[in-house]
Image 1: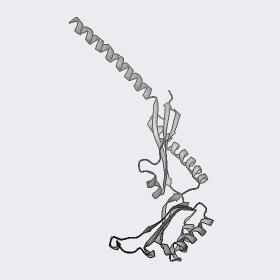
Image 2: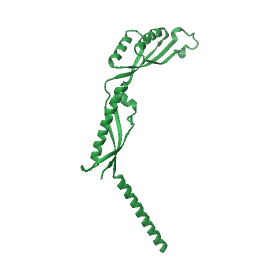
Image 3: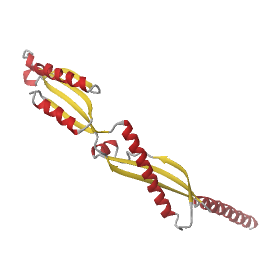
Image 4: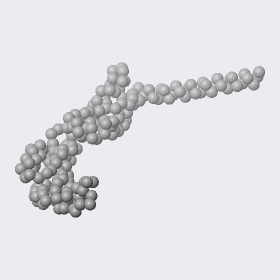
Length: 214
């Protein structure tokens, strides 16, 4: 019986210790607030990423290549990413002699244009040349200097959004707080960069931790 009494007393003391620890942790946590601030906006007008491709017979390849080379002289950032020759050989043609008109060519370039006017100029020029081609817009482009300035401005607005959340969460208007940490978060979550690029959206998210003043 005495042993049982001692065990109960020990459990009671342990519970008191753990309870005190929980209270201290809770009191410590109550001194801090952590929020996520964000700011999102439409991507401003700028340049575009394009993929220019030729898929057609060998006989007209030189016409396309000559035009592409001339365009590359005025747009040096234009880069060839693919160039191959293949035979368009159907199953029913097995056993037949290969002729020149069976050879096909695939050529692709990546390029960046500064605005829609440049894009329209390229497409109109191609349409007059009777060359099989495709011109695909794969996303928007903003120059490095302009992009950096925009990111800094959006960061400030995201922090302002975080401060508004902190002002709400601290409750008493007389209370004050001190920001002790700011961390930039991955802005492409949860949809991925392709979603924001395609929908012409830009977003900045920051995690802000603040300590409540007594």
